[in-house]
Every structure is written in C-alpha cells, then in structure tokens.
Length: 398
Image (cartoon, rainbow, N blue to C red; front, side, top):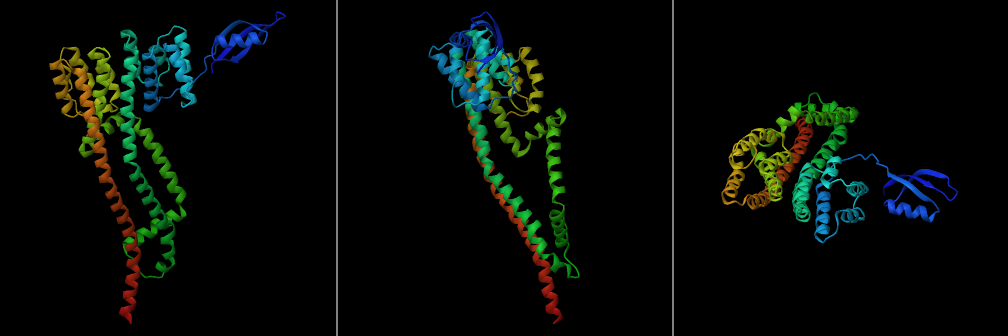
C-alpha cells in the first residue's frame, strides 16, 4: 500500500505532520475526516525498491491480464489496480504495479514508467507498449506479448524438466563416489598396509580416500572457490563472448542455433506486427537473443539494413542462426507477409527445439549411467585386485 507524507489540521487548529499508508489520496482524506482532521497536503513517499527482472511467466500473466481488461473497456489505471490486488502475485509484483498506477495517475506514460523501473521490465516490453500507446492497440499488443512470454517460459520449463533426471544422476554419482572414498575404502586400509606391494590403481584410490577422509574441508573450499571464480570469469565481456561462441558450435550448437533463431523470429514478429519500423525491430530484437557472439554481428546487419538491404540478405551471414530463418524472411518480404512468416517460423523452431531437448536428454541419461557404472566398477576392481593377488601368492607358497 502506498505511503503518504501528510500535513493536517485538527479541530483546535493545530498542525499535525507525519506519514500514513492509504490506497490513494481520497482514501487518506476520508480516514482523516473520520478522525476529525482536515487533510491539508498529502505527498506520496517514493520508497526505494530493490528492482530485479520479472520472470517470463510473471510477465506473461501481467500482459494477459492487462490486455484482457483493456479489451473489455477497463481504463488503464483501473486495470493496473485490479492486477495489483490479485492475491496470487508476490509482494514485489504488487509494489511494481502500484508504482505503475501511481505514476500513470500523475500523467506519465506507461512505457516511460517501465523505463524508470528498469530492469524490472525488459526493453522489448517497454518498446512494444510505447508502440501500442501510439497506435491505440494496447489490448492486442499485450495479448500478443502474453503469448510470446508464455511460449518462452514453456520452453525454459521444458529445458529444466529435461535436465532434472541428469541432475539427480549427477548427485547420485557424487554421493556414491563420496561414500566409497570416505567410508568403504578406509575399511581396507589396515589390510592393504600389510601387503608388500599394491597395484598403482589401488595406491591412487587410497591416496584420494585418505585426502577425502581427512582433508574434506579443503575439497569443499576448493569447490566453493571454483564456483565463485567461474561466475566472476563468466561476467568478463571477452570470456562471455567466446563462451557464447562455443555454444553455437558442434552438436550442441545445432540445438542452441534453433533456440536463438526462434527467439529472434518471435521478437521480430511481435515488434513488426505492432507497427514498429524494421530498423528499430532489428535493434531491439538483437538484445533479446541471449548470445553475445551473435549480437556482436548485428552491427553489420543494422548497417546493411540502414543502407537499403533487405533483412533476409543482411542476416544471411550471421553465424548462429539456422539457414531456415533468412529463407523464410525472404519469402515474407517478397509476399508482403513478413509478420505472419516470422511467427510461423518461430512456432516451427520452438517445436524443433523442444524435440531436440528431449533427444539430447535421452542421450545424456545413458551416458551418465555408464559413467557412474565405470567409476564404481573401477573402484571395486582396485579393491579386489590386491586381495586376489594376495590369495594367489598364498596359494603359490603352499
């Protein structure tokens, strides 16, 4: 609920100052009147919010409700108030939507308020809302955005679900190896110490076992430092550029190219259908691809488009897109149906990426099972081998 800094007067003429929360200034004035006070001045207190980007599904729900309400004839201020009072949203979302409503009441455009609240709302949403404000198509634009963010959220969820089982297998592998090194192998240490010689595999395993059993905290510190260092390194622009370039290569690159192409096509479709000029569409869409290597190539794309080249020819040589994308755009340019063609190819690529993720998961699972079996098998062989040699020596001596 918004907070107001007020100045009021009581029945004796005494000035009272302070802060109070109310749904709006009218509500505050009514409460003061009921208390026998005359509200002289009320100023909204702008609270500092720790802004963070909204999730894709949150953006989808926001756009869907806003589009549905405005399509039904509800004013933008009232629509935002209804969305803010939804019980299913988080307190952070409620604060954002109340801030949007309050600033619109003050006469600020919705797109400008979204810019003020960066990075809560992505640039794509801000630009499309600005175009909708100009063209008067707020309802249809919001519903189109809702569909786009829903598809993005579903694709991300599909990827997460596909990797759930491999993650569980990874944890099991680490747990099994940790138990073998930390508990099982130390049980054989006394017996192995009486043997004159041990195979090299057994000596390596016993060394690792002693380290895990006695210096486990060193291993934990190394892992934590490696994770922190890795996250810092990934934020360096040069490193991020080359890591993103690697993502577009090899067999894994075939999948990522489909995902990047679908993301670019859907963004372009939404922007172009909203009446935004093609050059601005490209400039905005490049920032939504999610790959620094591909985005860096768009300086040349924008230069060619501004010079009069077609979009299809400009992105023809972009390394990171599937060949189907420029060919589909070319058909759309020739037939005058660029928006529908972009939407069509985005739908096709989304389907292909989902199927590719499922196939990739089907490859990962058996590979990880083989890795776990090989690790456990190697450890067991390293344990059994010296025992077998000891029995062989005793048999030969007798």
